[in-house]
Length: 129
Image (tube, rainbow, N blue to C red; front, side):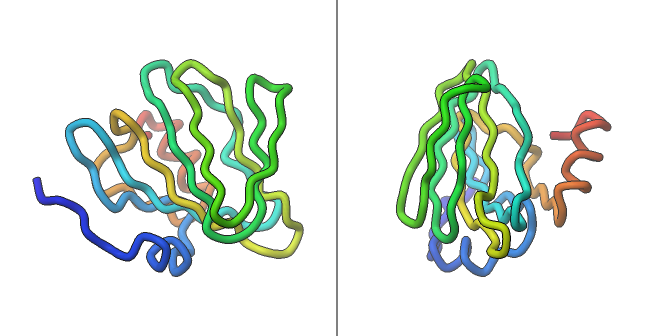
């Protein structure tokens, strides 16, 4: 397993895919994401995974446990503890939301690329996060 070294801000801003895994280690995973205007990840919970988010472009609305809401923008970080229901929604009606996230431990198969939310949903339905 090789270390990841890269210009994460540039990689995040250049990414146009819904989800792209950049690095998978034994204990963590680095993923860049791009949500289209008003698109959302969908309400989810990870029982054993803490998740760190950093917003690089756009405005994100985070919803925790279906009720607590926070707006995060460029340069903001959000950490979601394991066991917390969460949704990330692109708060903009005309601009993409670009972020990266770190899962500890990894949550997706190494090398995962989901070009669209629909592709991600289909993979999840088939049992491949």
